[in-house]
Amino acid sequence: MKNHLVSIIIPTYNRANLIGGTLDSILAQTYTTWECIIVDDGSVDGTEELMQIYIEKDNRFQYHKRPPDRPKGANACRNYGLELSKGEFINWFDSDDRMVAHKIQKQVLLLCGNQYDFTVCQSMLYDVKNKKNIGLKAAFLKSQNLIEDFVTYKVGWLIQASLWRKKFIEKNQLSFDESLYQAQDFDFHLRVLLKSTNYNCTNEVLVQVNIHSGNMSNSRTNSPQKIYSNAKVDLYIIKILYDRISNQTIVNKFNDINILFKASLINCNYWLAVKLYMFLIKSIKYVNIRYYKKHLFLLRTMIAFTSFIIFKKGEKLISHNLQQ
Image (cartoon, rainbow, N blue to C red):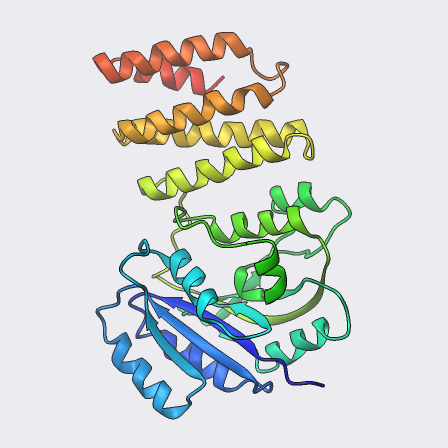
């Protein structure tokens, strides 16, 4: 097999206590033609000193800091790492997870000698505290109704599980949305699938996803950034996929924005509430009128929202409206 350079791109932030295990799993790869690009998002915990140790150990490791003109966050680091990469294949990875020793070799083989744009593998969730496997990230990696099943989480995978042809990424100008603080993997893969469903997969587990205290919160509403990120992705699904997914799925996504809108009000984040209110206005025309009385909903929401903002007396009416 020809040696194809694989660029492994890892964003990191204050993971000096965890990233060593990730880098050790890369050093243990049976496939040796790789470069590993670590992009630091501003760590202050000794990450830089640790990276120097790994660079001295193996010059295939590179350490870069996110440029100051790029927004803070893992997505900007992932995009910057792609710009620095020289590999024919790309594997974004996280700084607290592990690669099975033959991951890269297996996936390079899956892409060699064919025209697939990317390949995915299974990922096992691992409870670090209790030292036990929790289960697969998703039961299925493919289906006959792929877009619908991906949007409803019946099919899915994490960014760590994918190996990409770089030319496919560049040809389609694919990048991570740097405004998102949650659902970024989902958003990226959805936009990929709208460009191409030409991928293959293996049901073999090649990634261990570590679940620990630093990444256990999956709440969609415990920060304004998460609320906005999830609502933005939900709106994108409704607007772009309204003719490719079921009406019930559209309704469910619309309800999700409702919930996030209510959360922003309860948290007294009024400017965020205004943004999400506009998301509701933009998306309601795609919702089947059997489920929502369109004009009544808009009128009642507008009155409640105005009342809440101006007089701060509209929460009860808003709560009632969002339960309809």
